[in-house]
Each structure stands twice: as C-alpha cells, then as structure tokens.
Amino acid sequence: MKKIVLLIIDGLGDRPISQLGDKTPLEAAETPNLDYLAQQGTCGLILPSEKKPTSEGAHVALFGYNKHFLGRGPYEAAGIGMKLRQGDVALRVNFATINNNKIVDRRAGRIEKTEALAKALDNITIKGVKFLIEKSFGHRAVLVLRGKNLSAKIKGNDSHKTGVKSRKIVAENKAAKFTAEVLNEFIEKSHEILSKQALNKKRALPANYLLVRGPGKLKSVPSFKEKYGLKAACVAGGGLYKGIASILGMDVLKIKGATGMKNTDLRAKFAAVKRALKKYNFIFCHIKATDTFGHDGDFLNKRKFIAKIDKEIKCLLNEKALLVVTADHCTPCVLKDHSADPIPLLTYGNGQDVIKEFSEKACLKGGLGKIEQAKLMNVILK
Image (cartoon, rainbow, N blue to C red):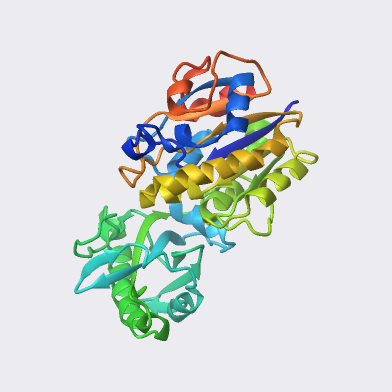
C-alpha cells in the first residue's frame, strides 16, 4: 500500500485582498514547490461540512468521523494529556480580558505564560463538582468538570465578540441545569481569583476571565487503524489536533520546537514527517499559524508564512508517498474568522491534471472537482 501524508495548513484559503493586488495570500506568496506539486499532481476543492466551519468539526470530517463527533472539549483534553473519566465534561477555555462586565480581548493579548493562573484555579470544588484546569498552548486551557449528574448539553459563554457583556452558561435541557449552574458559579469565582493574581496586575490586558465553549464527553470510537487499516502518526503542535489524533488511535509524535504557534519549527515538523514515513502508512501533519494570521487580519505575515511552508516542504518532493495538501477551512483576513468558502486541495503522487499553480482559483479547474469534506479519505484511498 502506498504511504500517505496528509498536510493540513490550517485556515489556508482566503479571499482577494486589494493591498496584495487583489490576490489572496496564497496567490501572492512565493510557492515554487507547491506550484510544482500542483503541476505534477491533481487539484480540486473541498466543500466544508459545516455552514460555520469549526476546527474540530472540520478535522473530524476530514478523517471521516462525522458520526463520532465528541465536542471540542474532549479532544483538547486528550491533546494535553488530561485523563478523562466516565461522566466528566470537558470544555475548551480562553483566558480573556474583561472590564466592567464587558469583554475587552478574547485572548488577553494572546497571553502565553498562564501556568500560574491555571494553578490558582485548579481543584476548586463547588456543590460536589471538582474543577480541573490545565494550560494548553498560548492563551488556551482545558477545563474538566468531575462529579455526578453532569451534562455536556450546555452553551458556553463565548460570543466570539468584544465590546459586549459577558454572558452566562445556558442549559440546553433540564438535565443540564445543574451543570450550567455550577459552571456559572465557577466562572464568577475564577474571575475574582484571577483579578488578584500578581501577573495580571502587571498586564495592560489582564487574563482575568474565562471564556468556555465546546463542551463534550468522552466515548469510544473506532480507531483509525480499525476504520482504514492504516498505521497512523500525527505531527502537530496544537493540543486540539494532537487530541483528535490521540482519540483516533494515532501515535502522536513529540517534535521539539513544534509549538502550534507562529514560532513553530517548520523544518523540524517536515523532518519528522520524513522520518515517520519509514514506520507509518499514514502521517497527519498539521500547521496552525496560517489560521492565526487570518484571525489577526495579518495578510502580509500570512503570505510570508505560506512561503516558509513552501520552502520546507521541498524535502518531501522525492518521497515515495501520496502527498495531500489542503486545509480544514478557509480563514479570510478580511473576516478575521472561518468561512465556508471552498478549500484548495492538491494531491501529488497519483496522476496529473492541467493546473499550473496551487491557489484557490486554480484549484477550481482541477481534475478532482469539488469533494465533500467527509469524503476526502475515500478519495485519498482510491
């Protein structure tokens, strides 16, 4: 069986930007190697599985696990090594800045050193429910509720907006009312504790509030090996992506310098992929920063980072493997958010069409056509 590398360049797709000559960051970037792969391979577009794409939903769809979606929390927990128990509810957390009950910054100035803040909130118990919190990467953390009669049927307090009042956790049904109640109490208590931390008193944007979303419970799912017969490995820096891979039974490789952030070591990641091809049939490699630049509206650095990826991917060009390059979703700089735009896709190592470059427009004319996100693995395996 041919070996497969699936490279997910998070948020890669974009929309034309006037400052780039009405080109997207991908079109404007210097990408001789990606263009070569497109010229020697086959291209197309992926249609997102969600109307409002999420990173977790998109990745689960890319791997063909739509029917086994757990909610983001359990994936985040698995990604940082938190061990969940039956009945635990896990949520994704942002350390945020609040002032006069209004959200000032959803990421507290993209704070990174939050270990002391998480420690100050860990192991609080409210009405028999223990709250466990651990730092993820950057401004993110994972919160686990452990106790009896807990439900994941709740809506988080993150409106994804700034300048608005913080909102309460809401139960989606009667069985979740207790969970919403104790979580709201924890959010209030954590705000009091965080506001008193020495670290926050020094910051212009103090990390004094928790925004939570993506509640879920762990349940068993068929492994990637059981589903596809492939021995798989994951090369990633972000906790979510390592968590999804871990729950699917992939081996998550430890890569020094793989941070999941703008400073990630791309060369180390691609070298790890090259080494992994000797042992594994399938390698999932995730690169995050393109999405981060999209959320920041930073089209110049998104273009520059795409060029960096292109430079480092050269080491894979002569490998005897099917190389698949795409994204989980588009993150247009003009929106500073995910969009449901079609996602560029190229495959190299099995056929050739007439495409001359790797871009959103060029892929529209590719021989692979338009593919539903949840059917990508079927296309790859064929």
